[in-house]
Image: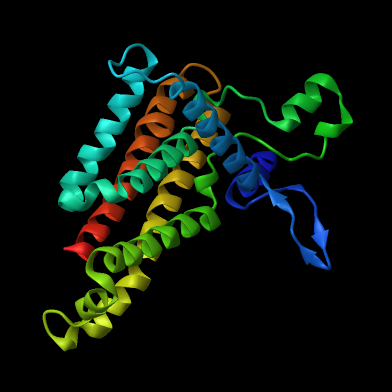
Length: 251
């Protein structure tokens, strides 16, 4: 049980994969950063493969791309009206990043560096301290994404309503609303951050408990919910709220 407790601690806090110090500053690479690199690489490869040799009449893999693009544009239009197409690329990028990130540990089939060390005995993997886990279990990742969304909200308001119109929105419908409108830009990213972080980390911990107590059969069924359904749901909720906030800023 002591070993499981240490494993939970490793799940909760970011783990250093590569120790790097520059001019005395700790610039170490954590497992969350490595996972984000992997997710970004997967998205880039997906984009390159599925957007090659596009045709006027879609067929094969182009149909998949067009379905995804149409879904994102319709989603943005429903949330933000006719201005939705301006922000659909951002919404779609964040949605795909979060979906892949949250589903990273599906079925827990990819071995950790510790497992590889035990199987191969290669010293390189001994202290690597890396396992495939959703980067969104790290509060630093979700907070960064939440801050990005609020910057997007502000830029959207400025782009559509100009600077004067965006600033004027802070005192509408009455000047008394100014402190509450400013407070919105503090509360909303915190809410987005911890909603995603709490749900994803909770799912990761529950799945680790299940793998520890019931190592066969049951984890696969529960993974369908916690790694697939819940991961996609949390990604959808995040971009849905972001699009609502953008819609409010540009209306």
